[in-house]
Length: 508
Image 1 (spheres, rainbow, N blue to C red):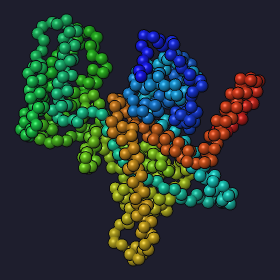
Image 2 (image 1 turned 180 degrees about the vertical axis):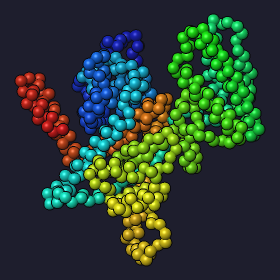
Image 3 (image 1 turned 45 degrees about the vertical axis):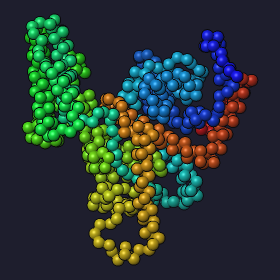
Image 4 (image 1 turned 120 degrees about the vertical axis):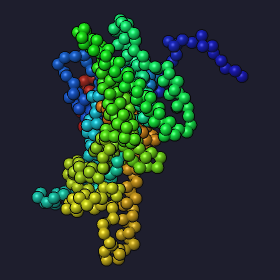
């Protein structure tokens, strides 16, 4: 039996959309919308906008909702807008009152949103999630003991804090000297073409030997095995081409200056010209000194803020991106340090512990870190505050350590193994949310991209805690019941709306 209806017999206007009767209350976007701190984000987002003039801005809930959808579904900017346009649950999640077939906003606005929503705002949201969980635990366990505490006594150390560092890799091609110089050569050729056109094609166009160099570079890149002499020969040719093109550009710019004509290059092209000058200086220095490194080495002319970060890993000895100093508190990750330069992560320990105290009001009882954090300075600082560390003590083992019981040995090893949780958090970010493929180009947008991924991982962890807690799940169920009751009252007796709304809001 064949059941077929011709597509010409049905139009989009005739297609039935029973959304009002078929929407599920337990949909993942509906459940997630109940725990997102919308108001906290809105207050921070609105504070950066001018309320006196300008066109009305996009709703903060729509901004945060679109960013969450983007990273959970791993979509590009255009794909996010298309997904929201097609999915009724996503439209509810971003705050729309009814289904709309039109795009919520233009995808190009994501760049401005990332510039505005930086790591500080996401760290505020992360701190709110951690604080809410800590307050619930304190109310359960310390409600009776809090009244007996002396006002002048210092709070005891409680909790565990895990620390580690990782790199959020930028989505760039693996940088080599020849690739960087060849990209610089091509960008210079584009500038020469533009300046020659703006000069009304006067005189002879400067020679760039682009066709000859394209053929030679293609032959060089096709070689499977390249000797050092082959590398140096190609780098020498590319350095000569870049140097010659830069001289041509300077001569063409001098013509505009002598004729008192407006400067022909845009701000973006000026920045690119400055980057190419710096790249040529660095590559010429490494070529003359026969070295492979230099200070503040540029590895991408399109992202000059990216630096090589030595990691010493088996799969990636050197990574290219921002280095993150991360602390893990009750399963919630916070970015305490975000640096585009390589640094020793042992300097993060004291600021991260102080940040923990600022959030909770007391120091942690245990700090679970790698050996690189266990410097003498850090050990002394922790000992003064009665904070334990998982690293073994320095020097020979004392008599008490040699006579340590099996229980203490197992406990110490178990506490050291718990540090693997932060490694799992890095794996979750890189495998699940593409933390190792940051596709933003600008420095500010890349930082916002990284911070958004950590906030979403914390949001998912917070949702798991709420679902596993029977008290919280019961309150959530009670909220849905009361909200449904208020909607029925609103349809029957609009005069009782204010009273019922007060009841529902007080439960949040």
